[in-house]
Length: 202
Image 1: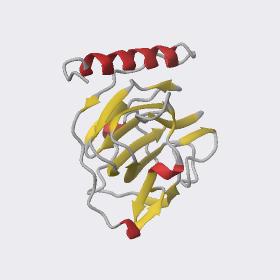
Image 2 (image 1 turned 180 degrees about the horizontal axis):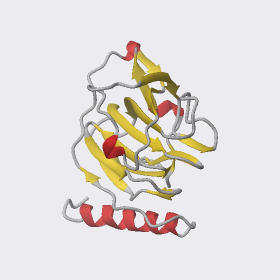
Image 3 (image 1 turned 90 degrees about the horizontal axis):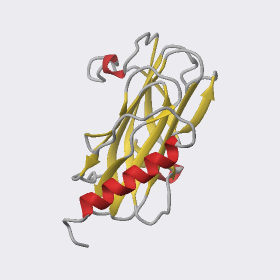
Image 4 (image 1 turned 135 degrees about the vertical axis):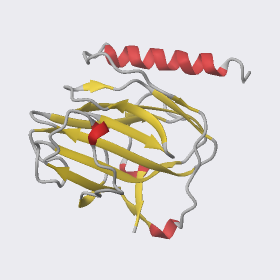
């Protein structure tokens, strides 16, 4: 493909998918990102375990993830690993935190990408979300809000591997949801990232 045409094609796909999701009745989405360079982790495959590592923060009575404590300052309470990010919690507990009110969550581990090429990502959240791949901000909608989609973002994956991922999320009150979607190069549309995509080390 002519490299000069690639940014235009990526932007066109972003516009089409955002339109499709917005037409489903969700609120307008914040802008997405285009991430050009990420690096797979150098890990021992035998050390991997399914799901993302979870830490949670109770009594997080804030309105933005910008106020979530840094894990170097306060790592929070450790919860059970989270197998997938495809939850409409309603008023149920946020994962294994035991609460649905004023809960902050930090998830980390690895995202397994089995083919190279352009991946697209989008999330539906209630309340805020921040998602990083290899320390690059990919999805952001960190403020308190009802169900809505983030902007659609693209990430260039140069080779198959396990890529560091971190997801921050919080729920203030009322109903809650957290769903993260991707479109791999060999897929026709966005789907929830399956359990086989999320891993963490012992």
